[in-house]
Picture 1 (cartoon, rainbow, N blue to C red):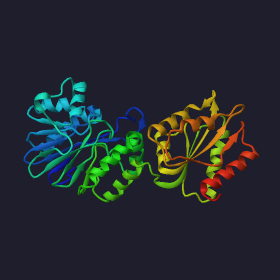
Picture 2 (cartoon, rainbow, N blue to C red):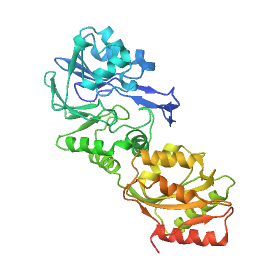
Picture 3 (cartoon, rainbow, N blue to C red):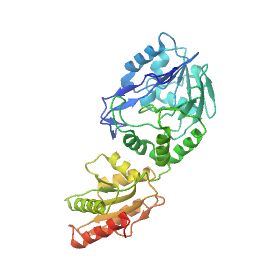
Length: 386
Protein backbone atom coordinates (compact mmCIF):
# COMPACT_ATOMS: atom_id res chain seq x y z
CA UNK A 1 0.00 0.00 0.00
CA UNK A 2 1.33 3.41 -0.98
CA UNK A 3 0.40 6.04 1.61
CA UNK A 4 2.31 8.97 0.09
CA UNK A 5 5.01 9.14 -2.56
CA UNK A 6 7.62 8.19 0.05
CA UNK A 7 5.67 6.32 2.74
CA UNK A 8 4.61 2.71 2.28
CA UNK A 9 2.56 0.22 4.31
CA UNK A 10 4.23 -3.14 5.01
CA UNK A 11 1.96 -4.49 7.75
CA UNK A 12 0.12 -7.81 7.92
CA UNK A 13 -3.39 -9.15 8.55
CA UNK A 14 -3.92 -11.76 11.24
CA UNK A 15 -6.84 -14.14 10.67
CA UNK A 16 -5.25 -16.92 12.72
CA UNK A 17 -5.88 -15.56 16.20
CA UNK A 18 -9.25 -15.84 17.91
CA UNK A 19 -8.35 -13.58 20.83
CA UNK A 20 -6.28 -10.40 21.04
CA UNK A 21 -4.15 -10.06 24.17
CA UNK A 22 -5.65 -13.34 25.31
CA UNK A 23 -9.10 -11.88 26.02
CA UNK A 24 -10.63 -9.73 23.26
CA UNK A 25 -12.66 -11.55 20.61
CA UNK A 26 -11.54 -10.54 17.11
CA UNK A 27 -14.05 -12.05 14.66
CA UNK A 28 -12.60 -10.03 11.79
CA UNK A 29 -8.98 -10.58 12.70
CA UNK A 30 -6.33 -8.00 13.55
CA UNK A 31 -3.92 -5.79 11.63
CA UNK A 32 -0.34 -5.29 12.78
CA UNK A 33 0.86 -2.16 11.02
CA UNK A 34 4.37 -1.26 9.95
CA UNK A 35 5.57 1.43 7.57
CA UNK A 36 8.61 2.50 5.57
CA UNK A 37 9.71 6.06 4.88
CA UNK A 38 11.94 6.00 1.79
CA UNK A 39 14.15 9.08 1.57
CA UNK A 40 17.90 9.76 1.41
CA UNK A 41 17.86 7.57 4.49
CA UNK A 42 15.27 4.87 5.06
CA UNK A 43 13.29 4.49 8.27
CA UNK A 44 11.24 1.39 9.06
CA UNK A 45 8.44 2.17 11.49
CA UNK A 46 7.93 -0.74 13.94
CA UNK A 47 7.75 -4.48 13.30
CA UNK A 48 4.84 -6.92 13.65
CA UNK A 49 3.73 -9.98 15.61
CA UNK A 50 6.22 -12.89 15.68
CA UNK A 51 3.85 -15.21 13.80
CA UNK A 52 4.08 -13.03 10.70
CA UNK A 53 7.85 -12.50 10.58
CA UNK A 54 8.47 -13.93 7.13
CA UNK A 55 5.51 -12.15 5.55
CA UNK A 56 6.61 -8.85 7.09
CA UNK A 57 10.23 -9.25 6.02
CA UNK A 58 9.07 -10.08 2.49
CA UNK A 59 6.90 -6.93 2.43
CA UNK A 60 9.88 -4.91 3.66
CA UNK A 61 12.24 -6.38 1.07
CA UNK A 62 9.81 -5.58 -1.72
CA UNK A 63 9.57 -1.92 -0.70
CA UNK A 64 13.33 -1.61 -0.16
CA UNK A 65 14.04 -2.79 -3.72
CA UNK A 66 17.62 -3.68 -2.89
CA UNK A 67 18.35 -0.73 -0.60
CA UNK A 68 19.27 -1.13 3.07
CA UNK A 69 17.29 0.51 5.90
CA UNK A 70 19.14 3.04 8.03
CA UNK A 71 16.77 3.13 11.01
CA UNK A 72 14.20 1.04 12.80
CA UNK A 73 11.89 3.38 14.71
CA UNK A 74 10.24 1.65 17.66
CA UNK A 75 7.20 3.56 18.91
CA UNK A 76 5.87 0.84 21.21
CA UNK A 77 7.43 -2.28 22.73
CA UNK A 78 4.36 -4.48 23.06
CA UNK A 79 5.27 -7.79 21.37
CA UNK A 80 2.66 -7.50 18.63
CA UNK A 81 4.78 -4.61 17.34
CA UNK A 82 8.29 -5.35 18.59
CA UNK A 83 8.69 -9.13 18.33
CA UNK A 84 10.87 -8.97 15.22
CA UNK A 85 13.35 -6.34 16.35
CA UNK A 86 16.17 -8.86 16.89
CA UNK A 87 15.48 -10.57 13.55
CA UNK A 88 15.54 -7.21 11.77
CA UNK A 89 18.80 -6.17 13.43
CA UNK A 90 20.42 -9.47 12.48
CA UNK A 91 19.31 -9.12 8.87
CA UNK A 92 20.35 -5.46 8.63
CA UNK A 93 23.51 -5.15 10.77
CA UNK A 94 24.16 -1.50 9.88
CA UNK A 95 20.73 -0.25 10.93
CA UNK A 96 20.21 1.86 14.06
CA UNK A 97 17.25 1.51 16.43
CA UNK A 98 15.48 4.75 17.36
CA UNK A 99 13.38 4.53 20.53
CA UNK A 100 12.82 5.95 24.01
CA UNK A 101 15.12 5.14 26.92
CA UNK A 102 12.44 2.98 28.53
CA UNK A 103 12.00 1.07 25.27
CA UNK A 104 15.67 0.09 25.29
CA UNK A 105 15.30 -1.17 28.85
CA UNK A 106 12.42 -3.33 27.67
CA UNK A 107 14.47 -4.61 24.74
CA UNK A 108 17.04 -5.91 27.21
CA UNK A 109 14.24 -7.75 28.99
CA UNK A 110 12.77 -9.19 25.79
CA UNK A 111 15.91 -9.94 23.77
CA UNK A 112 18.77 -10.00 26.28
CA UNK A 113 20.35 -6.93 24.67
CA UNK A 114 19.56 -3.25 24.27
CA UNK A 115 21.67 -2.99 21.09
CA UNK A 116 24.06 -0.61 22.85
CA UNK A 117 26.28 0.04 19.83
CA UNK A 118 23.35 0.59 17.46
CA UNK A 119 20.83 2.69 19.32
CA UNK A 120 19.56 6.27 19.27
CA UNK A 121 17.57 7.41 22.30
CA UNK A 122 14.85 9.97 21.57
CA UNK A 123 12.54 11.94 23.81
CA UNK A 124 10.18 14.90 23.68
CA UNK A 125 11.00 17.23 20.76
CA UNK A 126 13.90 15.21 19.37
CA UNK A 127 14.16 14.96 15.59
CA UNK A 128 15.41 12.41 13.07
CA UNK A 129 16.50 13.78 9.70
CA UNK A 130 15.94 11.44 6.76
CA UNK A 131 16.33 13.93 3.90
CA UNK A 132 13.29 15.93 2.98
CA UNK A 133 11.43 14.05 5.71
CA UNK A 134 12.02 14.95 9.35
CA UNK A 135 10.48 12.94 12.16
CA UNK A 136 9.79 14.86 15.37
CA UNK A 137 9.09 12.76 18.45
CA UNK A 138 6.58 13.28 21.23
CA UNK A 139 6.47 11.17 24.35
CA UNK A 140 3.15 9.44 25.06
CA UNK A 141 3.69 7.57 28.33
CA UNK A 142 0.85 5.22 29.33
CA UNK A 143 -0.89 5.42 25.97
CA UNK A 144 -0.87 2.68 26.91
CA UNK A 145 2.65 1.55 27.99
CA UNK A 146 5.25 3.79 29.69
CA UNK A 147 7.85 3.73 26.88
CA UNK A 148 5.58 4.93 24.06
CA UNK A 149 6.56 7.70 21.67
CA UNK A 150 4.72 8.96 18.61
CA UNK A 151 6.31 10.76 15.69
CA UNK A 152 5.28 13.42 13.20
CA UNK A 153 6.58 13.68 9.66
CA UNK A 154 6.49 17.36 8.72
CA UNK A 155 7.00 16.73 4.99
CA UNK A 156 3.87 14.68 4.38
CA UNK A 157 2.11 15.81 7.58
CA UNK A 158 1.75 12.28 8.91
CA UNK A 159 1.29 11.32 12.56
CA UNK A 160 2.60 7.86 13.45
CA UNK A 161 0.36 7.41 16.47
CA UNK A 162 1.44 4.05 17.99
CA UNK A 163 -1.63 2.37 19.57
CA UNK A 164 -3.62 5.62 19.63
CA UNK A 165 -6.40 5.56 17.01
CA UNK A 166 -6.09 1.79 16.80
CA UNK A 167 -8.96 -0.64 16.28
CA UNK A 168 -9.72 -4.33 16.13
CA UNK A 169 -10.11 -5.94 12.70
CA UNK A 170 -7.84 -6.86 9.80
CA UNK A 171 -7.52 -4.42 6.91
CA UNK A 172 -8.96 -6.83 4.35
CA UNK A 173 -12.39 -6.76 6.04
CA UNK A 174 -15.05 -4.10 5.62
CA UNK A 175 -16.55 -2.92 8.91
CA UNK A 176 -17.53 0.25 10.73
CA UNK A 177 -14.50 2.01 12.20
CA UNK A 178 -16.12 3.49 15.29
CA UNK A 179 -17.58 0.29 16.74
CA UNK A 180 -14.34 -1.70 16.79
CA UNK A 181 -12.19 1.35 17.57
CA UNK A 182 -14.42 2.12 20.56
CA UNK A 183 -14.26 -1.47 21.79
CA UNK A 184 -10.47 -1.40 21.32
CA UNK A 185 -10.09 1.94 23.09
CA UNK A 186 -12.05 1.07 26.23
CA UNK A 187 -10.53 -2.38 26.41
CA UNK A 188 -6.91 -1.45 25.77
CA UNK A 189 -6.42 2.26 26.50
CA UNK A 190 -9.50 3.22 28.53
CA UNK A 191 -7.77 3.45 31.92
CA UNK A 192 -5.41 6.10 30.58
CA UNK A 193 -7.79 8.82 29.43
CA UNK A 194 -5.79 11.60 31.08
CA UNK A 195 -2.64 10.51 29.26
CA UNK A 196 -4.53 10.27 25.96
CA UNK A 197 -5.82 13.80 26.54
CA UNK A 198 -2.25 15.04 27.02
CA UNK A 199 -1.25 13.44 23.73
CA UNK A 200 -4.22 15.01 21.96
CA UNK A 201 -3.21 18.43 23.26
CA UNK A 202 0.31 17.92 21.92
CA UNK A 203 -1.02 16.82 18.55
CA UNK A 204 -3.46 19.76 18.36
CA UNK A 205 -0.61 22.07 17.37
CA UNK A 206 0.33 19.95 14.35
CA UNK A 207 -0.98 20.14 10.80
CA UNK A 208 -2.00 16.48 10.48
CA UNK A 209 -3.25 15.17 7.14
CA UNK A 210 -2.76 11.43 7.74
CA UNK A 211 -2.78 9.25 10.87
CA UNK A 212 -0.85 5.97 10.72
CA UNK A 213 -1.73 3.83 13.77
CA UNK A 214 -0.24 0.45 14.71
CA UNK A 215 -3.65 -1.24 14.39
CA UNK A 216 -6.48 -0.51 12.00
CA UNK A 217 -6.70 1.52 8.81
CA UNK A 218 -4.60 4.49 7.83
CA UNK A 219 -6.81 7.53 8.37
CA UNK A 220 -6.69 10.08 5.56
CA UNK A 221 -10.08 11.77 5.42
CA UNK A 222 -12.44 13.41 7.90
CA UNK A 223 -9.78 13.43 10.62
CA UNK A 224 -11.93 15.75 12.72
CA UNK A 225 -14.36 12.86 13.17
CA UNK A 226 -11.73 10.42 14.44
CA UNK A 227 -9.97 12.96 16.63
CA UNK A 228 -13.33 14.13 17.99
CA UNK A 229 -14.32 10.61 19.00
CA UNK A 230 -10.94 10.02 20.60
CA UNK A 231 -11.36 13.23 22.57
CA UNK A 232 -14.84 12.16 23.72
CA UNK A 233 -13.67 8.71 24.76
CA UNK A 234 -10.55 9.88 26.57
CA UNK A 235 -12.44 12.60 28.46
CA UNK A 236 -14.97 9.97 29.65
CA UNK A 237 -17.83 11.98 28.18
CA UNK A 238 -20.92 10.12 26.94
CA UNK A 239 -20.87 9.77 23.19
CA UNK A 240 -24.62 9.33 22.73
CA UNK A 241 -27.93 9.63 24.58
CA UNK A 242 -29.11 6.16 25.49
CA UNK A 243 -29.32 3.45 28.14
CA UNK A 244 -27.07 0.44 28.45
CA UNK A 245 -28.63 -2.40 30.48
CA UNK A 246 -26.20 -5.03 31.72
CA UNK A 247 -27.65 -8.01 33.57
CA UNK A 248 -26.98 -11.47 34.95
CA UNK A 249 -29.77 -13.92 35.69
CA UNK A 250 -29.84 -17.37 37.29
CA UNK A 251 -33.40 -18.59 36.68
CA UNK A 252 -34.62 -15.91 34.29
CA UNK A 253 -36.40 -13.49 36.62
CA UNK A 254 -33.73 -10.79 36.52
CA UNK A 255 -33.54 -11.22 32.76
CA UNK A 256 -37.30 -10.68 32.60
CA UNK A 257 -36.92 -7.44 34.54
CA UNK A 258 -34.09 -6.19 32.32
CA UNK A 259 -36.03 -6.97 29.14
CA UNK A 260 -39.20 -5.36 30.50
CA UNK A 261 -37.24 -2.21 31.34
CA UNK A 262 -35.80 -2.14 27.81
CA UNK A 263 -39.31 -2.48 26.38
CA UNK A 264 -40.64 0.37 28.54
CA UNK A 265 -37.69 2.62 27.65
CA UNK A 266 -38.29 2.04 23.95
CA UNK A 267 -41.99 2.80 24.39
CA UNK A 268 -41.08 6.09 26.05
CA UNK A 269 -38.90 7.13 23.13
CA UNK A 270 -35.45 6.46 24.53
CA UNK A 271 -33.15 6.97 21.50
CA UNK A 272 -31.09 3.84 22.10
CA UNK A 273 -31.33 0.86 24.44
CA UNK A 274 -28.56 -1.75 24.48
CA UNK A 275 -29.09 -4.92 26.52
CA UNK A 276 -26.22 -7.25 27.48
CA UNK A 277 -26.45 -10.67 29.12
CA UNK A 278 -23.06 -10.62 30.85
CA UNK A 279 -22.85 -14.40 31.11
CA UNK A 280 -23.15 -14.83 27.33
CA UNK A 281 -22.17 -11.65 25.53
CA UNK A 282 -18.73 -10.35 24.61
CA UNK A 283 -17.77 -8.54 27.82
CA UNK A 284 -15.82 -5.94 25.83
CA UNK A 285 -18.99 -5.10 23.85
CA UNK A 286 -20.88 -4.54 27.11
CA UNK A 287 -18.08 -2.29 28.39
CA UNK A 288 -18.19 -0.39 25.11
CA UNK A 289 -21.94 0.25 25.52
CA UNK A 290 -21.51 1.38 29.13
CA UNK A 291 -19.06 4.06 28.00
CA UNK A 292 -20.92 4.93 24.82
CA UNK A 293 -24.23 5.92 26.44
CA UNK A 294 -25.01 8.38 29.21
CA UNK A 295 -27.04 5.99 31.39
CA UNK A 296 -26.32 2.52 32.72
CA UNK A 297 -28.60 0.01 34.45
CA UNK A 298 -26.98 -2.82 36.42
CA UNK A 299 -29.27 -5.77 37.12
CA UNK A 300 -28.08 -8.81 39.04
CA UNK A 301 -28.77 -11.32 41.78
CA UNK A 302 -27.40 -11.57 45.27
CA UNK A 303 -24.98 -14.49 45.19
CA UNK A 304 -23.14 -15.91 48.22
CA UNK A 305 -23.79 -12.67 50.06
CA UNK A 306 -22.18 -10.81 47.18
CA UNK A 307 -23.15 -10.42 43.50
CA UNK A 308 -23.11 -12.80 40.57
CA UNK A 309 -19.52 -13.30 39.29
CA UNK A 310 -20.08 -11.97 35.77
CA UNK A 311 -21.50 -8.72 37.17
CA UNK A 312 -18.55 -8.39 39.53
CA UNK A 313 -16.17 -8.84 36.61
CA UNK A 314 -18.11 -6.27 34.58
CA UNK A 315 -18.01 -3.62 37.30
CA UNK A 316 -14.33 -4.32 37.88
CA UNK A 317 -13.70 -3.64 34.18
CA UNK A 318 -15.67 -0.40 34.44
CA UNK A 319 -13.81 0.91 37.45
CA UNK A 320 -10.42 -0.15 36.06
CA UNK A 321 -11.20 2.02 33.04
CA UNK A 322 -12.23 5.00 35.21
CA UNK A 323 -15.97 4.82 34.57
CA UNK A 324 -17.48 8.24 35.35
CA UNK A 325 -19.86 11.01 34.27
CA UNK A 326 -22.92 8.76 33.91
CA UNK A 327 -26.30 8.08 35.48
CA UNK A 328 -26.50 4.63 37.09
CA UNK A 329 -29.55 2.63 38.21
CA UNK A 330 -29.84 -0.70 40.01
CA UNK A 331 -32.11 -3.72 39.70
CA UNK A 332 -31.42 -6.32 42.38
CA UNK A 333 -32.82 -9.78 43.03
CA UNK A 334 -32.53 -11.80 46.24
CA UNK A 335 -34.74 -14.55 47.57
CA UNK A 336 -34.12 -14.00 51.30
CA UNK A 337 -31.38 -11.40 51.89
CA UNK A 338 -30.99 -9.08 48.88
CA UNK A 339 -27.64 -7.30 48.97
CA UNK A 340 -26.81 -6.76 45.29
CA UNK A 341 -27.64 -3.04 45.12
CA UNK A 342 -25.55 -2.32 48.19
CA UNK A 343 -22.60 -4.32 46.83
CA UNK A 344 -22.76 -2.67 43.41
CA UNK A 345 -22.97 0.78 44.99
CA UNK A 346 -19.93 0.00 47.13
CA UNK A 347 -17.95 -1.10 44.09
CA UNK A 348 -18.74 2.20 42.35
CA UNK A 349 -18.19 4.51 45.32
CA UNK A 350 -14.82 5.77 44.06
CA UNK A 351 -16.07 6.47 40.53
CA UNK A 352 -16.29 10.17 39.76
CA UNK A 353 -19.39 12.16 38.87
CA UNK A 354 -21.92 9.37 38.95
CA UNK A 355 -25.57 10.26 39.46
CA UNK A 356 -27.66 7.44 40.91
CA UNK A 357 -31.26 7.12 39.82
CA UNK A 358 -33.94 7.94 42.37
CA UNK A 359 -35.87 4.82 41.40
CA UNK A 360 -34.62 1.26 41.79
CA UNK A 361 -36.07 -2.23 41.60
CA UNK A 362 -35.85 -4.86 44.36
CA UNK A 363 -37.07 -8.30 43.30
CA UNK A 364 -37.73 -10.97 45.89
CA UNK A 365 -37.28 -14.12 43.77
CA UNK A 366 -39.80 -13.49 40.96
CA UNK A 367 -41.18 -10.36 39.37
CA UNK A 368 -44.21 -8.98 41.23
CA UNK A 369 -46.77 -6.34 40.31
CA UNK A 370 -44.93 -3.96 42.61
CA UNK A 371 -41.74 -4.68 40.68
CA UNK A 372 -43.53 -3.92 37.42
CA UNK A 373 -44.57 -0.56 38.84
CA UNK A 374 -40.99 0.07 39.96
CA UNK A 375 -39.73 -0.72 36.46
CA UNK A 376 -42.31 1.66 34.99
CA UNK A 377 -41.12 4.41 37.31
CA UNK A 378 -37.45 3.71 36.56
CA UNK A 379 -38.15 3.77 32.82
CA UNK A 380 -39.90 7.11 33.18
CA UNK A 381 -36.99 8.56 35.09
CA UNK A 382 -34.35 7.31 32.67
CA UNK A 383 -36.39 8.43 29.67
CA UNK A 384 -36.65 11.87 31.18
CA UNK A 385 -40.39 12.05 31.81
CA UNK A 386 -40.52 11.83 35.60
